[in-house]
Amino acid sequence: MPARFVNIDRNTPLLLPPDLRDWLPEDHLAHYVIEVVDGLDLRQVQVNERGTGDEQFPPRLMLALLIYCYATGTFSSRQIERATYGDVAVRYLCADTHPDHDTICTFRRQNRPLLEESFLRVLEMARELKFLKVGQITVAADGTKVLAQASKHAAVSYERAGELILQLQAEVKQLLDKAEKADSTPLADGLTIPAELARRAQRKATLEKARVVIEERARARAQAERAAKRARGERVRGREPQPPDPTPQGSDQYNFTDPQSRIMKAGNGNHFEQAYNAQAAVEVESRLIVAPRVTDAPNDKQQLAPTTAAIPVRVVGAVGAVLVDSGFFSEAAVKAVERDGGPTVYAAVEKTGHHRTVQDLERREDPEPPAAGASVAEVMRHRLRTVVGKKLYRLRQQTVEPVFGIIKEAMGFRRFSLRGLAKAGLEWTLVCLAYNLRRLHRLARVEKAMAVG
Image 1 (cartoon, rainbow, N blue to C red):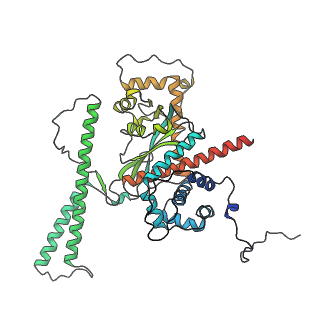
Image 2 (image 1 turned 180 degrees about the vertical axis):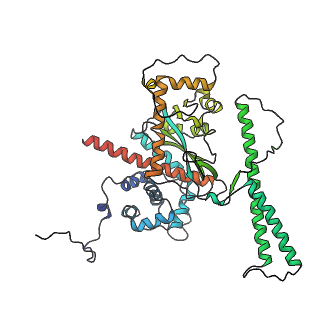
Image 3 (image 1 turned 60 degrees about the horizontal axis):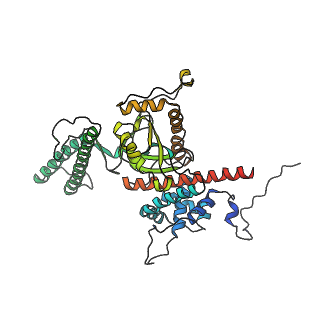
């Protein structure tokens, strides 16, 4: 008997137009995103109230389109535009309309208040659905490096910028001498002395601006270091300079493409990337992100207090405990967070391996508490050696690190599409909003499956 195959006919037109809803499973993420966005309050949206120009795409469509595409790994506005033609779920979500990439990018860039408010409304929805615990929650906080929309090769160091300025000054003098002496040696085709002088003048101005920015950063860093010493109770030697005038390090960097991004250690610290430090506080039971923020600080040493302060207490209630790794620990930061009845911090004081020895596995009584007047580091070591402290701190690794893994691996978000610290923060809010909806969709499916089972 000859083999039998399904008949594939691409030439005969369909008798009736298809219903795209039939092409997506009932529990598809696109359905869930549309349902959630339809329930959001969009009074924060930026629209053309005068109604001039072409018809506008509805804000709910644009917001749902961005959230779904970010949740499924499409971040570029041009790629999102292409998806409205080639992706069945996106085509259904857009009802067979096709916002162009400029419209998509403008909507994303101009609607930071909308994205921030939508992030909070989704948390409120999770609270009402009982997926998110409210009051005395435990959060795990951490930071991850996300590449900036700029190459590290577009950066220049303070020392190198000075060398290039001197080189350009010498070349300008050579060109002026050549013009004054009417040097008969011609320049290469298409090059003129005035144009070359203008090009070098512009380049010199750009390098001088870079050095000024690096000097300002060095002054701010010096001020922050003096303030941190005072907060720790250390004596600050020397007279406070007015204004402070520290010398920048020769290796301090400035990036011409995205000046607010920084050269940061990435991976295990074995290489450097042009990046931002994306922070997230994650509620340990639901694994929902409750506080996203972005900083240009290359490490987390000063991030404990601001990341904790970013948690919306009016939505999630009081925070009972904050779990962080050793990179966040400092006595000043812990005191700032725990002041006036704030949450209890559980932070490793120094780096420790993940391997547990046989002695670590043995049941032990809680050690004696440190004596009165003990340092914050001593108190923290004792806190993490107690039964409660060990149990809580183990949640940190299995909470926030998998969230970053999902964002970077499953969603594929490894580089910002927007430039500048404020716009990177906007985009990170959108990423975390998309992650939360993706997480809620999964939790809802599991709950439904358990109810049916």
